Length: 158
Image 1 (cartoon, rainbow, N blue to C red):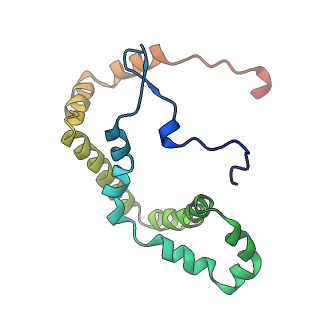
Image 2 (spheres, rainbow, N blue to C red):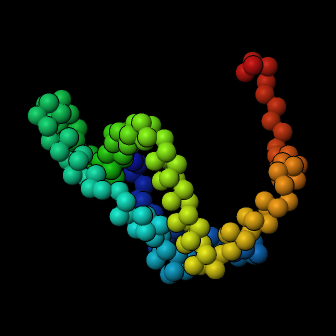
Image 3 (cartoon, rainbow, N blue to C red):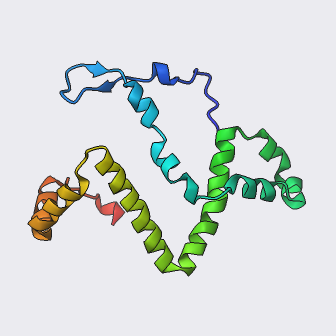
């Protein structure tokens, strides 16, 4: 599960430089990029609950400890977080499956949160979306078909 490579991991300071929009020379990530990272997660953090304690409670159960205690102790923080998500996400998915209207409301709320965030950053998301919508689905599909790569499958995949 973890990275067992003997190569040292790249730090944020030694991360590869991103190409500039003009494609001329690579540019270093700006300090604001580092500050922006994780802001969306923080914005929606109040909506998630204390899943760490739920997973901790589950993983400290005597049966889980008997069967998986050593493995749980050997996990890195990142591996533990991935296991936590893979364990608890199906629970959340099952809860939403029982209440389909709440999932639509939650998705709508999250999408509107992204849209509001974009508008605050002077990205005219709603205006652009309205202009695209006015052109119609037929225009959209024609443009998409023109840009779509043709995929030819070999006969043995059919």
